[in-house]
Amino acid sequence: MLFRLTRSFSAGIIILVFPYYVLENLHYSASVLGLLYMAATLSTAGFALLFGFLTDLWGRKGTLFLAGVLLPAGAFLVFASARLPMLFIGAMLGGFSATGSRAAGSVGGAAQPIQSAVIAEFTTLHNRTFWFSVFTFLSGVIGGAGMLAARLFDARNAILWAAVISAAGLVFLAFVNPVDNPGELGRLKSRIVIGEFSLTAAVNGLSQGLIMPFLIPFFALVYHTPQAKMSLYGFGSEMVAAVAILLAPAVEKRLGFVKGIALTRGIGAVLLLLLPLTRIFTLALIVYLLTPALRILAVPVQQTALTAMVNETEMGRALAMNQVARLATSAGAVAFTGYMFDLSEIALPFYGYVVLTCLSVSLYFRFFGAKPELSPE
Image 1 (cartoon, one colour):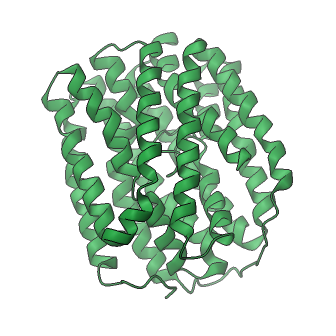
Image 2: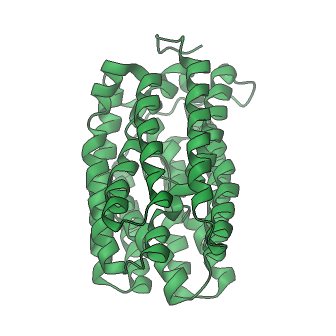
Image 3: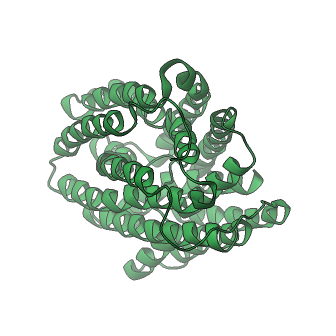
């Protein structure tokens, strides 16, 4: 728990200050920021796949420590040098992808599949969504506090503090003792359902990569919102998302897995359409406060469904493959949006987001709409 919360605090800092550091302190373009996000996203996907295999075949505690080292290492490198090659290496190690909430694996997201596997181990199918929601709620609150704390420092020193705090969190792994049931490296028993989840994750990643990394840059570039004010707005957005995530068990009970995703993400897509169509700051701020919450509200439900439908000895690999599919496709979308922002074609990524969200929801209905029982296939 404490390990996860220190990472969330550090991630909250980095999500806010990194785009300001690149765009305003170092005076790089939005295209460069997009390429940094793309490289970080691809590296996070690669690390997530590696750690997913290690989780199942080697052990969860050791793999979690290896994954935990990457965030502070990357942040230290970004602090140490403003040279572009070092920024790329640091962003790739730290996973500065910002392609979603910390629940779904943004900054430091390579560790997320392992953390989810550990949570699944200590819960049952009946209470798993509740505990996923609680952990996500606490991560959101602490991440919001990190965003708020970032206003106390300039961007570069804030990144240093993120590195120190995330490194300190590694100490708490000494008290984590998951039970390892090593699997075998061979043909996956749950390969069909893993493939279905991975395909939906790939489409989901495309939509996510188009918009989510650029919500804060959107306000910096379009409304010229200063970092200090954006930290308050970011804190507010995190708090709304954190509270909303506690509704996930109720969403699961009332609507189920598929309908819950369709409703929350559908509403979020409609709201995001307002950003390029208007230039009313108050309206844009309301959309910013609400849409991340709607985006991640069904994440605990989706995590429960995935962990329930796959074989226990394949859980780490299943979660990792889902993460890889999402991040790999989002990488190209991130680069595209960065280029569009440079050309001042800000509206196009938002339109693409809506289309891809509709496609993603249709795939959820296609693959999982007729599966009321959550059990391994």
